[in-house]
Image (cartoon, rainbow, N blue to C red; front, side, top):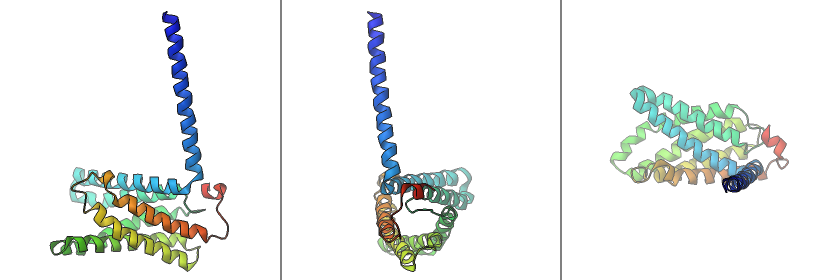
Length: 213
C-alpha cells in the first residue's frame, strides 16, 4: 500500500512539475515576443520598487536619504525600462538619463508644493506634467538617433502621462497601497502608446535579435 501511495505521489508531483515547466516556457515565450508586456510589467515593477526603496532609505537615514533614494529609484526605473528592450538597440545611457530625470524632476517640483495649500488638484497636475516633461526630455537624449518627431512625441507622452499619473497616484496614496494606485499603470500605457507610434515609424520592423542586443 505504501509503495503504491509513493508511486502515486511521485506521478502527481511529476505531472505538476511538468505543467509548471510548460507554463514557465509559455511565459518566457510571451516575454520574448511581446515588447508591450515587457514594457508595462517592468515599468510597474521598477517604479514601485524604486519608490519603496526611496521610502526605506528616507526612513532609515532621514533627509539625507531623499537624494540617495531618488537616485536609486531612477536607476531602478531606467534599468527596468532598458531591459524591457521596447526599442531596438536602446542605449545604456537610458539608465543614467532616467536617474538624472528623476532627480531633476523631483527638484523642479519642490516650489510647486506651495500650490498644495491653495489647490491640491491643480498642484498634482502641474507637478506631474513638469516631472514627466523633464524625465522624458532627458530620456529623449538617448533617442537622438531617431527623427525629431520621435523625440517630440516621447516628451509629450511623458508630460501627458505625468499629468494623469500624479493625481491618480499621489492623490490616492492615502487611501490605496502604492501597488494598487492606477497612476503607474496609466503612465505605463501612455508611454507604451508613444513607443507603439515610434516603432511604427522605424525604417524596419524590429526583429527579436535587434531587441535583445
